[in-house]
Length: 425
Image (cartoon, rainbow, N blue to C red; front, side):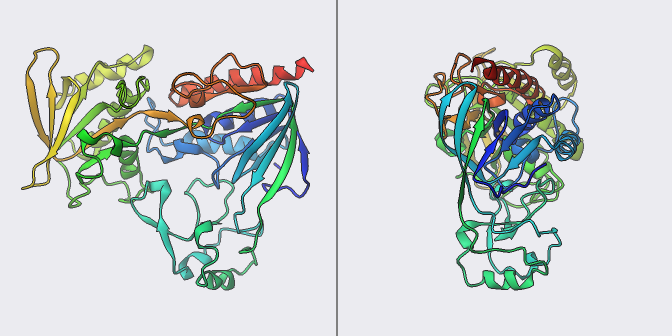
């Protein structure tokens, strides 16, 4: 693996993979292991993407370290893969088989001498919101992005580089690894094809006014409960109520929170039903007697996932409610939340009081905010269309909503299509 901050101004490879999450890593590995040279570009300080923020994969219910560590081992041992972190595509030109891409490399402010000794962190007097934990706790201004961070190197939040307090951090480093004056760098890459695997972000739950996120403390989202359940999360893996840090005896999962809704996301994100059932197993593991309520329009459990759905139905304290939650309010006396819905089987209007609610927010492709270059076509929802002929191929959730396994399968196919661009010269 080549250095993450290249010395030269122009680099060449068979394939550029944009996005270092599970789909991007899979694409890079599949190409490199067939002998192709690959540039793997990631906007964040480390590889892994949103999968690293999850507590467990579905449906195996094992931690993301299982797959991520295997992929990282394959990447580290393959000289055909060149990694660029804190990198962004600025522009692209050319035709399939002969593309030139301008890449902006943002400074890490920590160089290759870093050994992750950790001497810098204790002396840093500045704290920042921990974006890895969705702002639920803090890190220092110099921090290791996560326990799975690769490259294993600290990074400094650029918002605080100019603060006088950061001089103590420089003095504390025994390896001269901190460069507060590290500049932005631009390089050019010549490639035959591009795999665009920039992944997704959760829909902004605060936009769904009737569900109370941001106003009612004990309303959280599906991505937040993943961090609460994780040993490396803000509560060291204990799922507790945000308002009073108490254990819970009841919880509600609200499906299609903003999804299948003409006012928010008009499409189904495909994985939310099963993801909520997976998260319900976190509750059952910690609270064997808790009442779990799941409100749904219709459960989507394709193929082999049906077995998991049937298993959850066998849990006597797992209650399925067919009906979309229209409103969430708070019981001011105890901080509980009240879920109001219409049961579409009976027509009954119900009010269910639980101690905490989890909103299953949908998946928004990052291509909506940062579209690919070369006039790449997107569909009506912002996913990369399959019929582009410009040398850019969408992969994983950049192309459509997928779970981890399906993202990896899609990335393999996308890699083949992108490499075939070279035959069009």
